[in-house]
Length: 180
Image 1 (tube, one colour):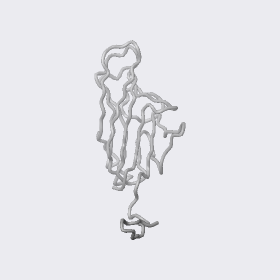
Image 2 (tube, one colour):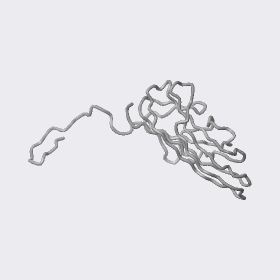
Image 3 (cartoon, one colour):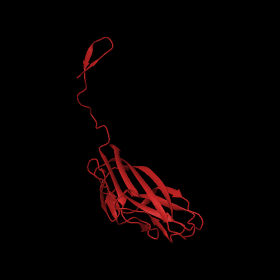
Image 4 (spheres, rainbow, N blue to C red):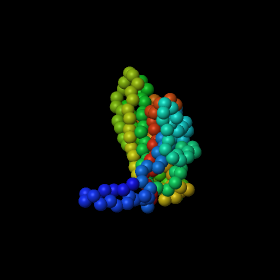
């Protein structure tokens, strides 16, 4: 391949770049069963998306008891899209939140991103709301840098993080953007 300069002279094309370009890993997981908000951390009923053409790019994440381990070092976009369900007759929750937690020592976790929404008043029908939050996470060591997800509410009675095994309702997404 050659590149033609405006004066009709040609130069050789670059055959190899000294760095990787483009996204090399994208993975998405979902909650398969609704979880009452009396439990904060999402620790069970998680699966990699797997229906109707959904897929993963590269080596995906590993998950154990809700803790996600990265396949390689790098800068990752981590996103939590939470769907919440309030069953009929439940009182207003004032706020509901979705939280991304991280550890860099494989032990203590800190909240690094939180999204809030509001559910007010008494209702006679079910109500659904959504929350999204995202962060960039610099994974310099795959043994110590991990992520987990959590929820919170001012009132947990009759409120659920909504899940399904056939469609994405509450999802956890990971995209490797580049080297650390």
